[in-house]
Length: 135
Image (cartoon, rainbow, N blue to C red; front, side, top):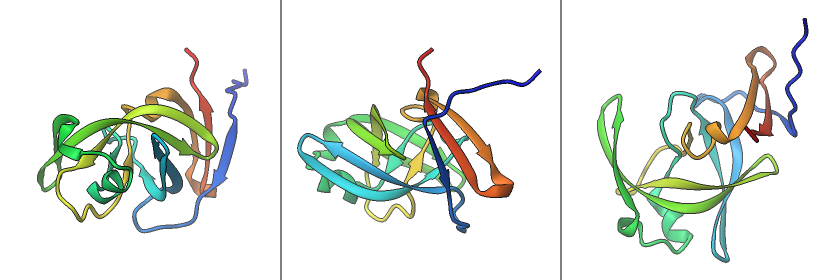
């Protein structure tokens, strides 16, 4: 029997060495920043560069501290409430910003993004589907 899942958006993402890279907009108060992030189904949180947090006017170290585990060790980060817009879906979420400058890529992870969405992937066609999860 076929299964129907409602999606609001679809996006044909380009081939990229970093993986599934999509455009995102972060907003804090009146300040916005447009960037790109990698969809990481194994990532525990949404993680963005310190530079983006500073452009949004955030005092990075005043956020919720979290030590993240990485393949090469650990990373200190600080969580702040911001708005994430990805493919015309806007979510208010806690996003973590790296404590040090120079993070090589931004990540959309489970907490703050994937757990708030229905996410479909057809990797062969470089196609993702997104819809709000209302459950």
